[in-house]
View 1 (cartoon, one colour):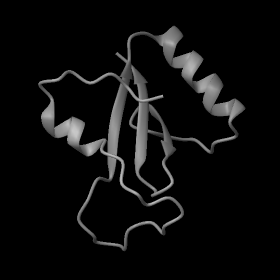
View 2 (cartoon, helix red, strand yellow):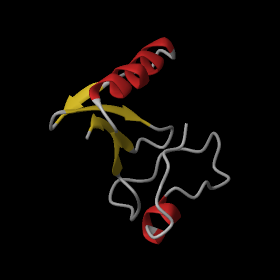
View 3 (cartoon, one colour):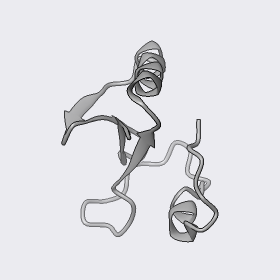
View 4 (tube, helix red, strand yellow):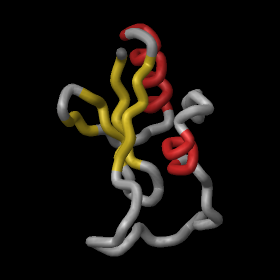
Length: 83
């Protein structure tokens, strides 16, 4: 699921661009690039629904700064929290 992003957030939209990198290794330490981004869900109930899907998928989670963190295949942190 890709979060809805306002069209005026051009830089955020560009950060979500998908590169043809399936199966590639994570970026080298110190490399320039995206490290994390927040997904703010409308309320706690929606956050719980997303976390249930994360659990069903067997993804490893961690907690950081009040958010539940999952990592994409490149190791970028996706911080899930309610608004």
